[in-house]
Length: 449
Ligand code: HEM
Image 1 (spheres, helix red, strand yellow):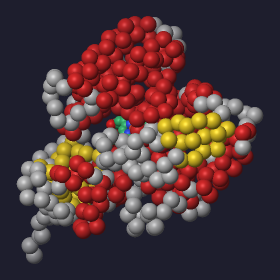
Image 2 (cartoon, rainbow, N blue to C red):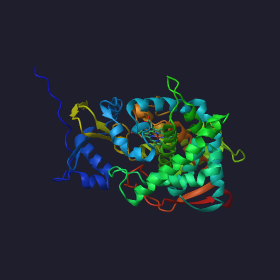
Image 3 (cartoon, protein in one colour):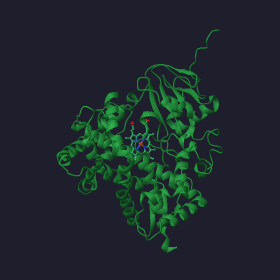
Image 4 (tube, rainbow, N blue to C red):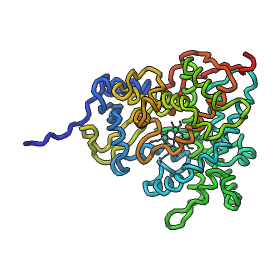
């Protein structure tokens, strides 16, 4: 019998002559991928001008594809935009360098290394909620991002560095972040890119002059991840050169603050939109983190089961990660379709997370789908793709969970809150998904009520 050859994935509806899906994809990529899923199921394709891309939205197909090696589905070509920002580090590094760098970072994200940092993070968040005063408004985008960036600087470079250089470092890193660009050459004379390149040089110069002092610091923990990176050695005993050590330090700050802030904004929005859960999480916080005890410990945070479930449900319904991309370096079969070499492959957590076969009533905010009663084996949580999958799975997921628990618990414990716009829409700009525009939250401390 003849064996059936796999065919290419079917084209999503709505492709126009010449441009294909480019215009609608630029406007709202998630909507294009959702309509592809409705028409064709877990694997299909789109056309962006002359370029073709496979889209994988089935969870099993996504996990299998994201587990493929760099020689098949490559990360490096699609992360070249990181290079003008931080140099050839992590996803932008050559595959063997990437493996050395990830292996060096891993121990810093495990067990005690993370729990030891909880007190610092809790102090920062406590100070932030106190500085809000007794009533007012904060922006769940801008103000929360400022908080998560300050936390990132403290974690990655140490609190003493933050006292000395925090203001300047923050402004420079934001200029680098604003220069994220997928298309233009590094030295293209656009003001945004000129500012990015200048800020990057200034950041590297700033951290170069910190390196020697950091190398002789008797307690590397005081230097946060910077201390860890500087002291890391590969199997042959070699340390990172200065540019790599600085690039890794900067990319950690970058990877941690924007994603966590965007996710936190959605957690706040969803909790405030669902008063029953808001009230139940508040009760849980009052039970496990009584007011007189100012700084929660990791053990306290672990008792907040309903809050934990709400964080997972927010990541399911409104994942900060709206898309993951890989380059097809050699032909590959995914979900029974052949994806040719030279295509991109896209993964879309917002679409996967709303598949009714994975999560019944997928548009409903139902945190208890992640409770130990309904999800005793953790399968529902295991299907989430917000933190990626495979070798590039997020290193900071545990840290982000702790940070989000702390922000929500300390805000709820202190304030009554209300969304000024009750239904903010998601932004369609590149980068993490967050509520569009300023997302104002009105607050008033409980003692005033
Ligand atoms: C809710 C917050 C966060 C979200 C949604 C998130 C999401 C992600 C995703 C989707 C990836 C994989 C990208 C890919 O496969 O192409 C990733 C990778 C990464 N994340 Fe996160 N992240 C978060 C917080 C953090 C934090 C707090 C840190 C560090 C302190 C961090 C550090 C990293 C690093 C270093 C990688 C690269 C891993 C690798 O390529 O080996 N992330 N993150």
